[in-house]
Length: 164
Image (tube, rainbow, N blue to C red; front, side, top):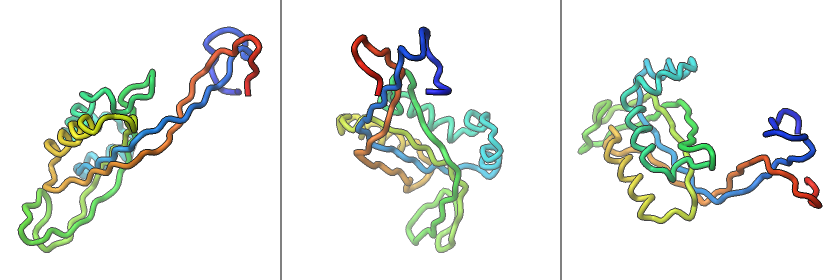
């Protein structure tokens, strides 16, 4: 258990408890400016607050306590950068690009998890919230699962029990 902080007492009195949890994964692709993309690529975390789209997404999703709930850690998410590519067909009303032309958009990819047992009505509420605030005419939102994720905690070894 090298590198694990002990909450007090002797190291031999604690063990790492690893548990699997059934979850679903929510991934949202969100367009960002080239400036925001460059700031995030440099590791400038202020871009999360300074980009109005990302700030709106994070604020909207923070309303749902079920998203990113990992016990003592709330609203846990992962993010990545990439590009969305698309060609807009006749009849579309694109936010970016022109009908018939291929468009590439810098993209913020937001990923979080929620309990697989969450009722469909709750899932529909936060999905609707994302669709309502998303700038694209047809947003890319992925919902997967159920999957298993791990969580860990330090737990005391009770008398007579051995750590595995």
